[in-house]
Structures are given as structure tokens and as C-alpha cells.
Image (cartoon, rainbow, N blue to C red):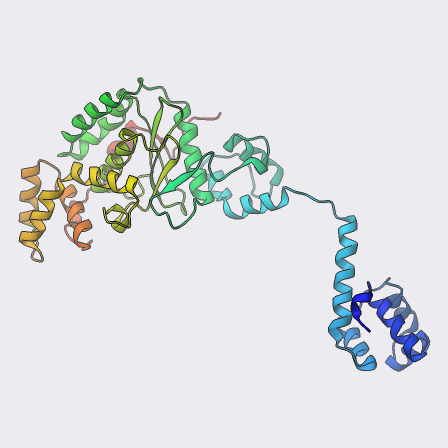
Length: 379
């Protein structure tokens, strides 16, 4: 007798009783249970418990799982009859489960008193991502490329990108041209000696047509920078200043500028994640767009050939006085030389005191969001 022929455990029990010529009263006596309770199980008014399944299994010489499985299938079938389907439930699970909603509330990106206020948060997320329904929230409005191409864009990275995008859309800058940006690079190059000069960066970029925003990274995003275009004539560079170091600032900025100069990011948002160590190199394991941007950034900070010759002559006995000498001859801050030496040698403990902090110089002069500040957008 196959149990697949039965829809409920009660039907199976009825069939077993008929085979034996037993009544339900006789079965209640055998099991030493209340007859009314047994009748309710057979009629489907009461579920089979694990204990009862064991008792039925003993009496009928069947696996107790047969009774429990029928009960489970019956319960699910009944639930489907009354449950209201909600196609957006899975989407809500993804958004609420993966997006850092609490942090977005704290940062003032969405407005809700409590993460349990689901309807309010859903409404805020629609506004944040600029869509009509939560099912329309995609990983990105177009394809995305990352420095680390082994992992997809995460919801936290998506949220950070959209914040940069929202801020950039409200910025007013000069009309962009490649020639103006090339001239800007020349001006920036002359500023590498002094950390204080970094305060001029936002103005120089705006004058060349670059929408430049500094948005503090979400805790799980690990983003350093992004390059994308709002339209054919509106390039955007976003930075997180995740590492408050002079070498990282100039490397990431020049990296993103190279993306703009080469028209990267027009068809695919370029998100630079963990742009340090192996991802800052130029090996064959780095995708072409990133390799070109890394090369331009490294040469901008300290010309590659000079760093290579320096390391070839001095390694492994790298003296601070020699490093300072290279900084003087290349006319850059010692922190930029130290950063390039660290990247090339993998010895990140070298000359760390020269990696000065730059946030105090850039934050008061840039359009920023984070570190206690909320960019005045979307209000």
C-alpha cells in the first residue's frame, strides 16, 4: 500500500483500520487514548503529533515518518489555501536583510524612527533609489565593474553609490572637457609637496567639469572610489577617504581621474573596492581598465621608473634618509614615496609616520556626507 495515495494521515489510518477490520474505538483501546481525540485525528480536525506518530508506527508496523510527512504536506496545502501571495516578500527580505538600513537611518539617508517601521522604510527606500516599487531596485542601473571582480556589487556598495549619485545630481560645475581635466591634472601635480594644498582639489575639479563628492563609506562597503557619468557630459568622481592618508588620497583621486580621461564609466559604473595592495598593482591579474588607472596613479605620485631604480639600489636596506632624498628630487611629499615603496615591497610597516592625515584639509572644502555631516540633498 503506497502512502502516496493518501492526502492526510487520517486517510492512511482509515485504510489501515479497514485492512484489519478494526474500528476506531478498538484502536483507541489499543493505544490507550481518548476515542474522541483519535476520531478528530482521523477526520483531520486535529494534527498528528510526533508522539502519536510513534504510537501509530508501533501498532501498524510502519515508519512514524509516514504519518508526520502526510501531516506536514496537509498543513502546507491548507496554508496555501488561505495565505495571500506577496511577490515583494522575497525582495523585502533581500533589502532588509542585506542593506544596512540602521546605518542608513543613522546617516540621514532615509528617515524612519525605527527599523521595525517597515512601511515607512519601504517608502524611504523607494525615494532613495528613485523607483516606484521595491521590485525595481536593481544592483545598479547599468552593469558595474569593480576593482575586485571576483565578487558582485553588494547592497551596501549599491547604497553608497546611490548616495554619491544623488549628491552629484544637485551639484553645479563648469562644462566638462578632456583638455580642461588634463590641465587640472597638471595643476594638481604641483600640489603634491604639501598636505594643505589638498584643500584646493574640489575647486580645481569643479572648474574642469568634474562633480566631486566625498561620502564616508558604510561600515561594510569597503569602497575607496567610484567613477561614473550622469550623462554624456557629466562625469562624477566619488571618494570615501576610507584611509586617511596622503598617499591613498592622491592615488585614489588620480586613479579615478584616469577613468574619466579614458571615458571609463560611461557604460558601466566603475566601483573601486579595496584599492590597496594587490588591487593597486599592474599585474596580469588586474583588468585592463584598472591596470591603466593604477599605472597613471602610481606615476602621478612618484614615477614608476624612479621607484623601481630606488628599490633596486637600496632594497632591503631602505633608509629613511634615502627615502626623503627621493621625495625631494621628485618634489612630492615623503608620504607619497613611502606609500609607493610600501606597495612595491609589501612592507607596510616602512615609513608610516610620513603617511599624514588629510581629512582636515579636504573635508571643509568639499561637498561631503559623513563624519557627522549630512549632505543637504533630497530635502
